[in-house]
Image (cartoon, rainbow, N blue to C red):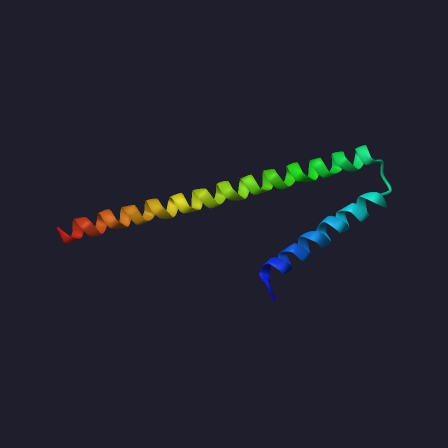
Length: 77
């Protein structure tokens, strides 16, 4: 199956599901929008935290590799 068709179908289903969910939501639109914005901000904050952790992890590994290279270079001299 074509990957583009799968992605397009998934995105279409997602958009339709969100639209139906908002139409039949028991809360006012303004309350729902605020809740969506709050959740979105929470997800962005969580994503930033995970990206920072990942970046720190990569930086530590690069630093360790550089230190190992220096040790190996000294031993070979």
